[in-house]
Length: 335
Ligand SMILES: C[S@@+](CC[C@H](N)C(=O)[O-])C[C@H]1O[C@@H](n2cnc3c(N)ncnc32)[C@H](O)[C@@H]1O
Image 1: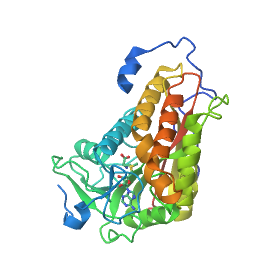
Image 2: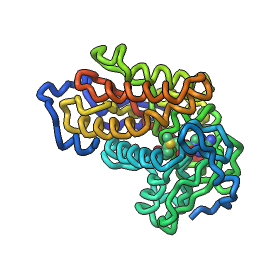
Image 3: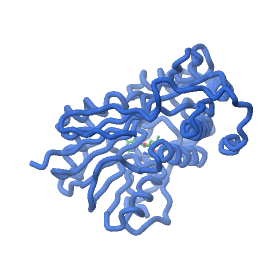
């Protein structure tokens, strides 16, 4: 991975050659088989009075605005996704060149693992993680606190701006990324950094092997429903433009290939692909259930069949699906 950061210029660098080579010697790689097999906000009863629907649990604060569950099974998936992101970035939490940050926020923190790890690595920083759901652990480092907040509403952070604002994996969560990134600009100190890590949510294959599979159908149907509902499903490739429009400088863009499954020959991509498959399989049903039942009138059973077909085809060694994951950071000018 090379890094190029030039004022007002950006570079796309990938973690893989132009074509990802298939591991033709693959039979059953058991080592990868194994891998597959203090709230500061007042937690009023209205926030904890979760919505229950089709056997899954959803957030209550701003009811209906996020279409994925917040139950134990989804939270386990988010923890797996955290590990996958660390694998992708060689265990780095962020790529921005921050120095001694004092005040940091992780937007839509989920189960809060990024914020907790960041607080451990920067004991002098005050770290906030905010989310619609109070699903974060209570035993956390003393310098991290979690808030229930809606990042798509007006922020109250401008009087106490941040040195670093981080947001990861918000595809299918947010409707207006351009507005959110402008809000980040207003809430970061001059000279401070903002970093978003996000997906182009649709998978592809370089050899056509994804075509007409259950995996492709899953994303076409489910993400089609998210798009119908007004959510951004492919923010990754658009982040650079949104950062530029907001006024950031020293913008840096990196693109990482994330395979689905253990089909690549390259050991690093194989491992990343194993984690991707594990977290995706854990999320196929929950990821599509509310979007397809609420916005496309599917039944729960139809969604379960779709998810099962995605799981089955996603396990096939002759289906070489992959995703693009983007890390984009930029700096608010000093003056
Ligand atoms: C896919 S998860 C990613 C979690 C975390 N950023 C990570 O990378 O592990 C998306 C998270 O966004 C949260 N979310 C969605 N819309 C939000 C909003 N408007 N304000 C705050 N959090 C939101 C959800 O509750 C969920 O925890």
